[in-house]
Length: 485
Ligand code: F0G
Image (cartoon, rainbow, N blue to C red; front, top):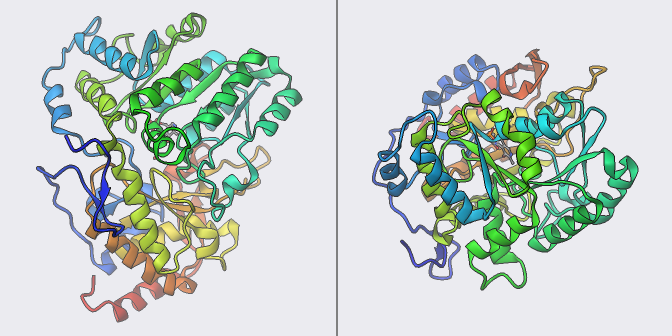
């Protein structure tokens, strides 16, 4: 255990000091520039389709790839493998009760599986789900069940330059207007997303959650909390919100939980393992969802998860309440963001959780949105340094029923920072390569679809460059990089 005060900066410099050390490592390789060109072509210019062996720094996501603690590995050995009534289930249930203090726990194999259960139980055709901002899988599932999504974050939540500390907050006037417009009985539920993913890992304040909760209770609307990115959000409440500096993380987590009717999470993020689940004290909501677990996931005491992962998750959930553990990601996000800003690279402000988000609208402002600026930048970042980020822009949207594009409100290249995985020199390498790319940004060209799946196309769609910009970028790189890598 560290000192419990969180990762520290030392000597007044903005260098985060880790409260952990690496005791097992994975060998990495940085492919040559020519290999990178070949690899990104082979992957249809989609970073999801790269093989991990061809990636130097995998910043695609923090999902299921966070470093686990020795206590988590130790717990995995104690797993009780049984179809029904395993002790492992009860240990995970106890850990969740400690964190959230809710009565019932329904296991699911990952976050979107929990969303599927929620959508199946509560989305009625023609109904609306109101939320601060959508997540890709959430919206795809809600629309699949015939519902629609209304987003009510404030207008500046999608402005990368707006400096508000809690850009994930609900705009309460918009929330009230959306509910009035639909009629409260047509609102399937209100969903609060912690650490709001698609606007750049931006947190909500506890004060705002309290108001949203009071509103939903007045209107009799079910309030659902997506806690997948709760760890970062807890950190920001403690460090940014007035009145919470001296409150403990367990107290803050329980206060959030007390405001929510149903909480679900991706255990690939929260709990640093692989799995997910739903907790609630609402017996009617529980009854509406319970039968769907054996139908979609597995029996009620494992829900499609391996018991080893469940044991690791139980330990990981408790570790989420340790400031030394959860402060590392936001401080590394800030470290990368600051290095990038020194080189002029536009990033989402303020630095949030989950990863550093590069603003492709400004980085490649010469590219039209129908050539997928964030997707092009993701391909270019791989070419420049073997760094795998994720497109979070128009590619991640779905086309409208008439086939026209839904242009995303933000075009972001997300460079995720999985928890306790990378060193500061690797972070500096990423900034160095992105800095070089920024100097040469006019060489970056657009992409066009070659193969476009109908649903969640960003996962496995294939694209080609609109001209020979990638060859030209690699030639310039070769001419300027002395070590050739
Ligand atoms: N909700 C949020 C806020 C998420 O970030 C994710 C996953 C999910 C739900 C779905 O969980 O992946 O376990 O099914 N986010 C990943 C990411 C995929 O890379 O940001 P899942």
